[in-house]
Length: 387
Ligand SMILES: *Cc1c(COP(=O)(O)O)cnc(C)c1O
Image (cartoon, rainbow, N blue to C red; front, side, top):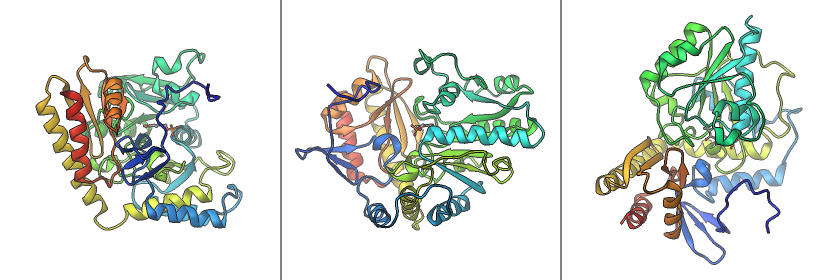
């Protein structure tokens, strides 16, 4: 009997070490990891540059709190803001905290710019924003909410893709709109340029903050550093986590100067957020992603993956209904006769790791630096479970 709470239906599989795209059990069996700890190990396992950064920091200093300046955190924030719309960063330990911080930033913006009545946040159906009480409310998935009392107030939801419904839902109390440019848990539905432009226009017209949740689709997953950079639409606030620490717990609230203006001393905090170990690894991840040609290579591999998935789709039209996602965040929408959970288990038997997502989607999240041999191995495993 485990002493852990039974919140997860865990597999009995346990891994001892990892290298590149593979995880190894104690008895030496290798598994191709196309789940990457749910979009976390962006650079695979045991990346030498990340290991060296963590070891060097571990020998120097682990934790000081945000009472003091953390130079590596200043540097990581500076580098992240140079690569996108944002001017300001607040570091967190997880995605849900990055969303909480994003909601608070949006509400404070409204408060300090003369609209204290604006505090509600609109999300879309199929979203996933986390498991804290506020992020559960924004997610609005009945399965996640059951038994936890009334939904936290201040969150409204509209159908994905419907701009008219969004405009109708905006009231004098609305502060912000939150959306994932590519939905993760919900089933890999991607937004598009015109939808994001319509959201941007509605937010500008009504004075709302546009929040992008790039916890899963950000940090290179889409083939660019941030997914919204494919669509040329900028948010006011963005939540990051997962890939940002390459496996070390780290998250971030990113905001424009204007959006961050209410976040003055004392308004928000975190004991661990941006601690020296986390930001040392965060800088190491960004070093690798900043190497010349890094994203060209990710895009080449992503198109190899796309070809492999298209071929699987063409060969198994009755089992695979559609391809979803983009870059290195992909999904196979399976026929209802083949539940995604069962496909994940069958692939595990073949020593290939994937994750199910909503809407019966098999989610494929390779390390960004996977290669064509590994993609071929993945393809063969999927073929063997579909035949
Ligand atoms: C995983 C995820 C979260 C929550 O992140 P945690 O680190 O589990 O709190 C929020 N939003 C999206 C899009 C996610 O994929």
